[in-house]
Image (tube, rainbow, N blue to C red; front, side, top):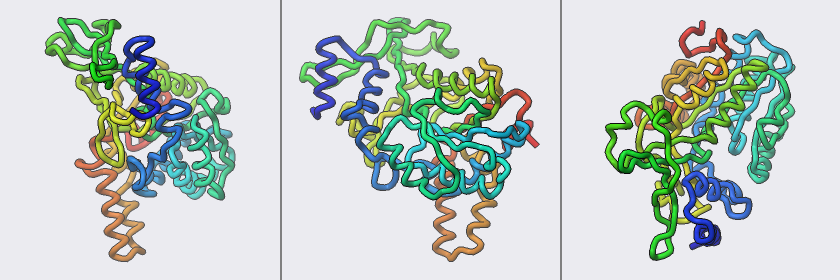
Amino acid sequence: MNSLAERIAGQIRAAGPLSVADYMAICLFDPEDGYYTNREPFGAAGDFVTAPEVSQMFGELVAVWLSEAWRAAGCPPEATVAEVGPGRGTLMKDMARTLRRIAPDLCAGAGFALVEASPRLAAVQRATLAGAGPDFTWHDTLDSLPDAPLFIVGNEIFDALPLRQFVKRDGRWLERAIGLGDNGGFIFGIGTATLAADALPPGAASKPDGTVFEIAPVREAMMAMIGARIARRGGAGIFFDYGHLAPGFGDTFQAVRRHRGADVFGDPGQADLTSHVDFAALARVAQAHGLQAEMSTQAEFLLGMGLLERAGRLGQAADETAREKIASEVERLAGPDQMGDLFKVLAVLPTGVDAPPFPGAS
């Protein structure tokens, strides 16, 4: 066991099994040995590659969507353009560059903000954005963002927030817990907390024992905070992650290290822990705040926003090697066997405010 695993094991011995959510939170965010505290997860040399790292086209098209949402909202002055969970700052850099070109009227009055809890990552973002154009501000939490219309983006942020798992046993749904086996290693077990029937999707009664159902109150709390801000001050939000558009059953808790699947118990703090995002649950939270919620696959969104057209323009002045690279990037972002179908998109907007490529937008 590494030092973090030893501390987790000690906590279990002292206080009993941990929920999956508590184990995930410790592994990712422990201030001394947590994954996001110490590791550089992004890019080819890290553990995974995100869409903004694949191609500048991703950030450019997200910026086009933000500008359309801003105009559909009536061009509110002094808006805030924000990204939550900005990674290395690549997406914000591409968005800011594009917005300065296509929406100078937005940039003239807008503030650009990054919501980042990790001091280490904030330092990386400052280096990435040095000389990128607008004045950027950093915030530890969503609460400290300016009280202004909010146009916010999140890419692969919800999957990093802890989830809870429940397992069906003898007709009841009991919380999955993490304890210690006979050899002292971590094992899955069953806790005492139960899930009410009205929190389950249709078909729960017919599922066999051992079926897993996942909920993520922390993710829903973040969406509630964003939804309340947009409902009160106006704006829009768009979020990208891997997950599903309808509630379902199954165990999606997983670890990723060096671009491959890993054991969730193998090396705490040294691998990314994540799970699929329930977009329908997040949409319901936004709707509860009076907002409309639009969902699609990442492929549908990017193609609807003009991915192929943008790739064609970039390729016009490029040589054959560069054109092949651009084509590979398009396939990675939107191909059905790549990010295109696995990744989903959720857009939240005030009722009556519509932005392409979602239904209702001009």
